[in-house]
Image 1 (cartoon, rainbow, N blue to C red):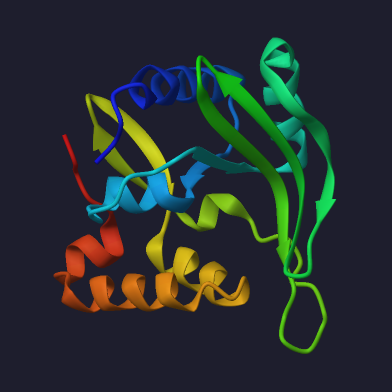
Image 2 (spheres, rainbow, N blue to C red; image 1 turned 60 degrees about the vertical axis):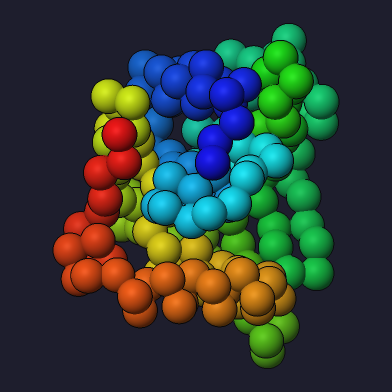
Length: 168
């Protein structure tokens, strides 16, 4: 379930990204909820490329909690920033890379090939497709979440798995 305070933030982010002409997608727990998972997101994750992250950062300089910077962990590297939209935490990641088990990094993949659109409250929103979300969870060591996504995908009819969903 999407908390009510998220709704205006989702709409604002979608409007900003569309006005800027960015390639972007919601990811993480909000992505899963929009696909139909039963959970409550605690923040909003948005993926784009580095240029998109910089442009979002310029628009939201008054909301910065963590300024845009290259952030690296054991499993992930991205241009990262965190914002506060009236109490809703928003994390923006650009040019995401994930570490493979052999220690090498996966080059950032073109986001436009990895998104599917859903209709939500009259808006067509780009979401990271669930096959990619599952793969990312696996690379990040979030095996239980990856398993839940795989189980969910296996239970869905083919059009939902492959062509997006409509969640009004």
